[in-house]
Structures are given as structure tokens and as C-alpha cells.
Length: 193
Length: 193
Image 1 (cartoon, chains in turn red, brown):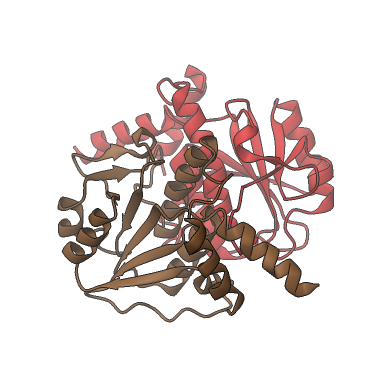
Image 2 (cartoon, rainbow over the protein chains, first blue to last red):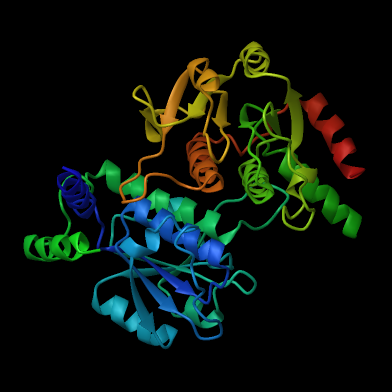
């Protein structure tokens, strides 16, 4: 019985995964932030994240703090931003680096139903110049208050939930986005986890 | 010169404050969560939060971790949920308790340009039954993944940024929402901070 319910759950979660939505995590070092980001990524149906760790190590994540989200989110590692972007471009992603610079456009102006990769930078330095310049655009979250920054896990949540909102409106969660064959293969893999 | 810039900043922030948007914080105990919530509240223009601490103490917030957001967000304390809700109802707020129960409606179905108070509950127990039953509605954030919960500061960010999105669309940040007299008084107060 428990197995049947688990099977159902895995099926329905995989049927809502968004293979064309992803995060690039660039040197984010705080394990709480990384955990929270993975947990939110799972909640919006992100299937896999991209890691570019050139100045920091990817943190150890306690299975408790992440509520095991890291178990359900794939990770691809890249040695550099150009390598990562090249791969994402081959796969048809628009690459949006989250940074407030003179060219940045506001989050709500983007069509996030397109294949989209959001780049988030290190807690102290933010997205690197390289990652910002090589992206298709830089994007900022409107902030109306005295403080001019948000915690990276909060910024990530606001950003990817806007993608969820737009995608729900278009019915992206109503039918599987993976091809049938891939979906079946993933189901088998997940059942073994 | 620095003073002039500060004056400008305070003026523009107060001109975007949303007196008809607020949070009720019910026994949220983790200082990092409270800090992050205040910081995000500042970013969307919340002017004041409501505190109902019946089983927990309001945590000490380091000025560093909150990036001083707590300096710019007013706090009203209430001894109980009914007392708090009575006051908010007198002021015309709809009260939305964030909890996934059988009657809960999805976040994106609400008109958040109405005067709105969002209730967030303790990290372990969530919003109390009392706070949920006495609210006008319960609201949930859609979650498509394996994990069935979000960190409270992440849930808060997603929720109040949806209010910001709806309010930006209606021009709520383009003109001061406070009456002129109140705005001038607040400016004076803030300049002394």
C-alpha cells in the first residue's frame, strides 16, 4: 500500500517537472541557502540545477535541513561559466543572470514560459561580471524599501515562483513535459531512491 | 550632501509604503526567519507588522542579520489572535491565514490589491487553528514537488511578492498611499532614526 502511494506520488511529481526551467548556482556557499534553494526548486518543479563552483566548494548539505530536496534535484557540474552557458544554449535556454545593473530588466517583464535558466551568485559578491556579461539579460527584483538587497534564497524563491505562476497560467503543470520514454525511465530511477 | 540624499531616499521609500498590506507573525521563533521576513517586508513596502506571541517570545534580532530592516518596519503587539484580528478588521483588512487545509484557496486566486493581512505561523506548528478559523480565508502556495513544505521566510516572500506584483500593475507604488499629513510626520520621524 505504502509502495503504491509512493509510486503515485513519484508519478505525479515527475508529471509536473519542468525540464526547461533551471538554476545556475555560482559559488553559493552557505549550506542553508543552498538547501532552501533546492527545496524551493523542487516545489516549482525544477528537475536539475547547474553548479559552477570556481572559488567556493559546493557545501555539504545535511539531509535534515534540506528536507531531502537534494535527493530529488539533479546536479550538473561545470568547470566554468562559458562551459555551462554553452551547454544551456545548446539546449535552447535563455540565460538570465540575477543582478541589478544598468541594463537589468525587471523580473515581471520576462516571458518565463520560455526555456529559462536563472543564474544566482555568491552571497557576498553576487553574480560575477563574466556570468552577467555572457548572459542573455540581467534581471532584477523590484525593491521598494530602505534595504537594497534580499537574501539569495529569498530572491531565488521570488524569481522561480514567478516562473511557476506564468507556467501554471499556461497549463504547463497539467500535462507531463518529459517525453514518455524519459518519464518512464525516471520513474524507475526514482522508485529506487 | 549625504543628508540630502538620505532625505530623498526616505521620501521615496515612504512614498511607496503600502499601509494596507501587512503581516501577522504568530509565534515565529527563529531569528533568521524573522529577520528575513522583515527584510522582505521592507522590500515590498510593508510599513508595519502585527505580532501575536502567545507561546513563544519574539526573538532578539541582530542588527547585522536583518540588515537593519527591523529599524524601518513598525511593530504592533497583541495579546491574542481575536484582539489582533478585531483591530485589523476595524481597519478594513481581509485576513488571509497561510495554511494548506481543505478550504484553502490558491495564492494566485486572491485580489491582493485589497487591504490584506497575511498570517504566518510558527515553524513547527504552522498557523494555529484559532488563527485559521477566525481568518477570512486560508491560502496556500502551489507546490509541485516531492517536499510538501517551504521555509516560512520563503513562503512569506512568495506571498507578499505576489501582492507587490499585483499592486505594481495597478500603479500602487507610483503615488504615495499615505495621506499627506501622515507622510510628512513619518518623514520627520524617520530622519531622526
